[in-house]
Image (cartoon, rainbow, N blue to C red; front, side):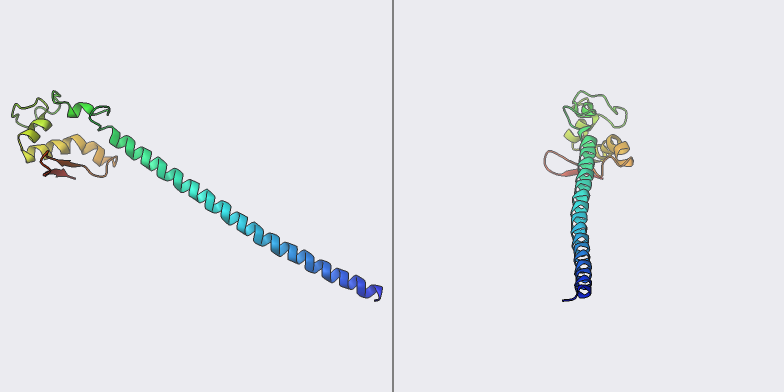
Length: 140
């Protein structure tokens, strides 16, 4: 086999090998990039969900009866919004008083007052309240 043909053959085979390496490395790089992008998006979405969950829980935790910032709203001896509704003298707290006296209209009004700011600012999506019997007092 003449040297010219050998050189030409080596050149063609070399170029084919280089092209094959480039094609393989391009495909490999695309797969790695797609996997890392999927992992990155997954961690981003997971982080966003946890932040939303924690923010929502913090907004709701304000209203826990014992440990929340607004726990005084559930205290039977609390004197919050005393002048808003007439008293039945069952409890000092007007909300618990209206619930105990089965006065739905007054209870709804007080619940709207309690949660008005939280609902207006979007910290809470909705509020539902029930009588001890299971009858719904408020959904808003």
